[in-house]
Length: 310
Image 1 (tube, rainbow, N blue to C red):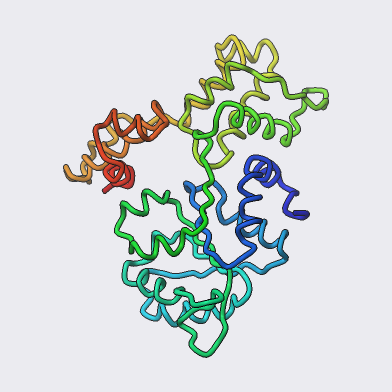
Image 2 (cartoon, rainbow, N blue to C red):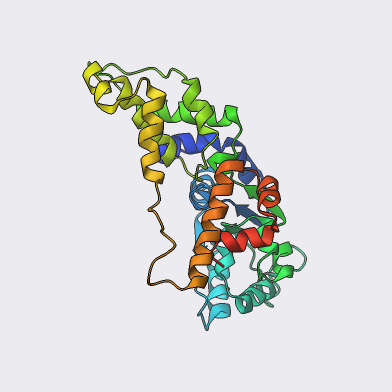
């Protein structure tokens, strides 16, 4: 983990996901499949490339595919051979067509010793890692080839978005962001991190995404207020750093009025848009999936469909 620890993002990524890194280090030392799940932006591929490359000195191969691949099986076999005794990653597996999922299942079926049945006369084996933006439950609720789900999820690692971190984890994440950004005052003295309880409590009410960009943005606003002159504070009409941070951060979350009712959309499109925004609102207010399902009186499959505009 040397050269990859040069950026701010990398530093607090490895700090916040230290447990998941340890999981991958243990799981990848074998031939059983690994499924890594987490919302877009949580750093799933980043975790794989850095951990496997730096810890195991293993080259990571990525299998790229499209739903229209007419020679899917041929390309898959080539990649399995190329990654023999190394690591092969399948990114965004939910995007593989149903027909190709069946082909994938047949190709990665294994016999004694973990060698693939598709190669009758060759001993081809490798560590398979599958990556999805969907949880295992969501995969089961989509049109996914069920036998393949069991085959790819022998070991599971989940990267949580910020909004699902507990208060202490979120606090540590914010503190880590602050320290790594090395904020300075007007005299170029580095500002120490001093917890602001109002900001920290407010963070837990936000529907924060998977990555740390929101924490960076909030930390920048926090720092900016601390180096304001008294005259500058009066310009913004706020009494403390929390008021300033909240006011300025919320500007980026404002939606245009009547965004659903535009002339180039039909009624079905507008209803889908409304349902999607309803889910986003519920996630922001309630955070936990069971409470969202109860409030909206819908199933988890319906929740997934609404969120994805279906």
